[in-house]
Image (cartoon, rainbow, N blue to C red):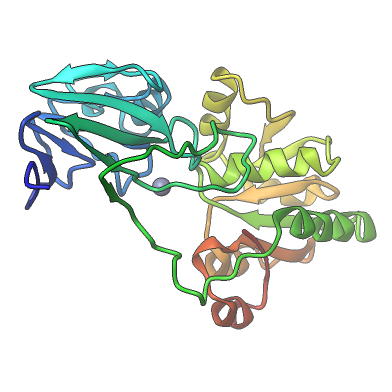
Length: 275
Ligand SMILES: [Zn+2]
């Protein structure tokens, strides 16, 4: 398909004169979702779902999240140059989208990150028949075997019931993983307040603003950790950092969301995991 080109700035749609998730500031960027390896600051015009645009404003600030923002709901078709463009759900994080492009009878889909497993915090992945599918396969290697989320949540909640005087710490990314984890905990029957690091709370509020209920989430600073015993305390840091930074007597288990770790890495860290 000769109308998509890989340039130093990123993947370029020639007849539409726009980039998808470009690496550098460009005149027109179509953004698949709000993670920082896809949504970067400094573009002139940014097209994305309303949720992704809001996430970009929250993370980058109004001035850096695109000089002009163009919101595009799922399935809403627009013409960019000679190309018909719409966004289809990717099931990855709130607002995540596949970019669908049609030009001269050909259809190309650029997936960005996507997930086919159920996730109550975002619209499910939608299969779009196409002539060309451009995808990422970060965890496509067989070495990445992710445990059943409900089973891992049940283990965590069993720990909490078994040792109510201890604080349980979960390391997770601020966008997507954190909110999915909270939703899974609620589905698992845990409805007590969850104590969140300050870097996690604004994104949770944004999710709730888009109609994703997360229950009672409370700001918690590390120096007040002793008072949060019997609570689940979510932290931003990754597992090794979490273990090193917390290291307090109230800590029973360091859990992490292990989507980016192999079994060998998890064994080395010595922690439990959530996919
Ligand atoms: Zn992502």
